Image (tube, rainbow, N blue to C red):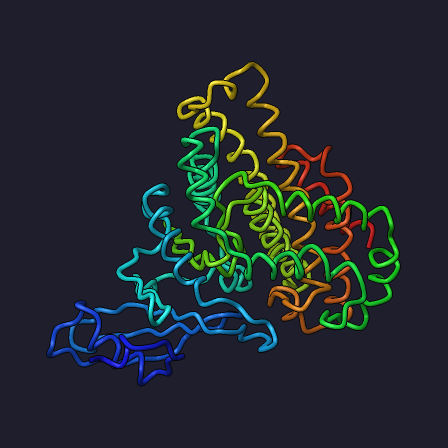
Length: 407
């Protein structure tokens, strides 16, 4: 019997190569296969298997028993099953805006999927100050279709409850609860704070009782609001892009939660790119041009989401009481409010928590990095505290402009 059918073990490159040849009906027997481990994330092992003869390739993604970023963080390998299940759902709902899944192996806790080597990770492309004029249109298609169409407004309530059970994801949700909602807001020993930023954090965050109360409210809303099936970690490192296409990857944090969580993560990470451009682009005209592009993208994402949400809601609503006059507006307003809050939480946790983003850490000038961090923190605080007043794309970008002018 194949050693891959007996018990789980963490694969290395040679093992993944053997697995592809022995367990997958994808390559021919004459294939000349090579394997490279290409994972650069915090949790998983990612292997690219390629045939030198035909150019065919695929990805094997295996879940390890602990986080690569910190071995003390234990995570269930079952997250790979969750990722496989949600990829199937998202592939159908979003009409191919995620990679195609070929296989899930419950023994080896790995999934096999489409190789996206002809795409670029969005974060890397934004740090290189590249533009993607269709991104706002495409990501809002993904957000509306995956969030609204998995909510009680549209799907059968009993069917949704079955899905909620299938996507119970306690270990990865705990990571989010700790790293996003809790640890950045006190002087936690796991936080990794840039020293020039620490005094600002102590003054504006760790001793701010008003802010701490709001984060407590938000944490309990996150714990109890099973609104829609979330990607759960939708930052710019989880999106592949080409000039005319996107693919959303890595939905292993998937669970049913507040819809604004996914939208807010997208917006916050575009703001990181915005502050990278402010700090890293020397030529004034080029800086203004790229920041204008990112501003327009942020505004479009919020405003297009609202437009598409309203249209899709009217077309797909199935719940009778959700058709009552005024309910759609109430429901959408709650999503945009949560979007603002999560934008703020993500901005704060990537500066004060343990998991940072290269958009900011890659700023070489110490003073410019410190300024960028303080802008993100100030904007984050305002997104949280003023979330009820932030309703349009222009409102979102104005928060960032105000933070820049204040630092």
